[in-house]
Structure formats: structure tokens, C-alpha cells
Image (tube, rainbow, N blue to C red; front, top):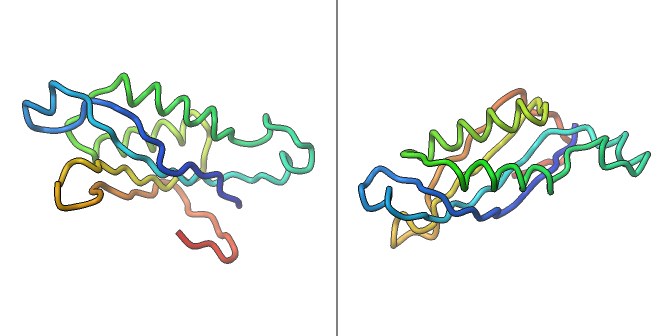
Length: 125
């Protein structure tokens, strides 16, 4: 299995538990790893035979920017479910960061994996 990935996708949304957070949009930052077999797409040079990171990115921007969440954990779960169901992915790893949440930290958030992790030679996160 292969990995199609997206790094540091920044999206503005309503996220947080405090009243003031419910009144503004904050930036979240996503890293997404998706298990995909790219051999057919590579052989045929056919984008329709793989998962398009452009299509996935556009879908995530649309979904997240029009949603509101209390917890980063809830956002991550819903994104993982959306990706696995809409793009027929056997496995996804997702990091959702909320960089402005803690002034003394560069970023905070969650990292989740859903589905069966692929076996990839020399793969490291």
C-alpha cells in the first residue's frame, strides 16, 4: 500500500469550548496520510485511478469551514469518517492542530489513525 498525503492544510473554522471561541473563526492545521494503491494510476498516468489530494483538500476546506466544533477530538473523528467513507480509504492518519490555543506552544491538537494501517517499506511519520 502507498500513502497520499497532505501537509499543513490551514482552514478557518469555529472551534472551542469557551464563549469567546464560539464568536470567532480560528485556524486549524491538518496533516493527512491516506492509504492508497497508486500503481494503476502511475502506470496509466490517470488521476481517476488514485485519490486526488486536490479533491480531498477542497472537500476538507468545504466541510471544516462550514462546520462548528467544540472539541478538536470531535473534529478529528468526523474528518476521519468523512475521508474513509467518501474516498473509500482503508486507513487514514490525521493530525489536527490548533496552533493559537496555547500561547507558549507552537501547536496543540490530536493525532488519530482509523482503519487498518498499511504495510509500507521504510515508512516513517
